[in-house]
Length: 220
Ligand SMILES: [Zn+2]
Ligand SMILES: [Zn+2]
Image 1 (cartoon, rainbow, N blue to C red):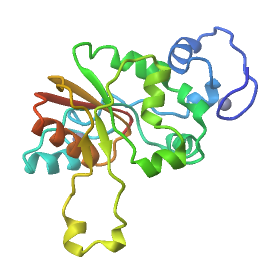
Image 2 (image 1 turned 135 degrees about the vertical axis):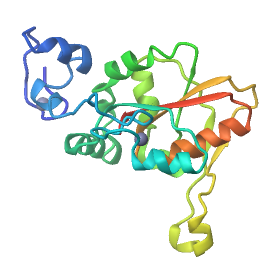
Image 3 (image 1 turned 60 degrees about the vertical axis):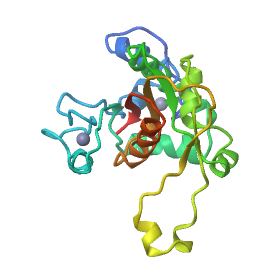
Image 4 (image 1 turned 180 degrees about the vertical axis):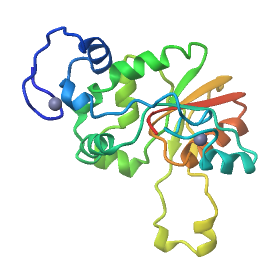
């Protein structure tokens, strides 16, 4: 078997370190590669899982000051290995790489039984240039049911906006479904950076009657 990340052949043998490795990686990457990813430690922001911070992080304090709630969970820190991974997966469009974290994601999202999973969408132009939605590819590979409730408008180029338009955080999501929305939603994204994307999507769902919105991402 060849590692999806470094292309070197690796053994599937069960040894002392493989219990976590096998369960987490689904045997598609070698132990060396998988150990470069850093699971979020016990010391994380209680509301967004930012790694190695004591108490709430600056981003969460900002949202709180705006009267907005953060209830986010993430699995891995966005370190160099994760940046490299996303650069191959998203920007070079390597669809096979959806497999690397499918098991970790399945395990983590299984516990949200009474919630509906809603992936953060791509705009039409991003979707046509990449060929797939990286978040939906994770969920499909993990065989987790989800509802594709949100759409995203193509971003207007920053340079063509007035200063006022650039400053206002514009709503670029819209609701796709005409059907009734679920009461409880987990928004699923690949990377959580400041939380701005999640806040916009969450705001829209709340405005349309969703009672509880929490969020999840692979990396933070
Ligand atoms: Zn490898
Ligand atoms: Zn935080």
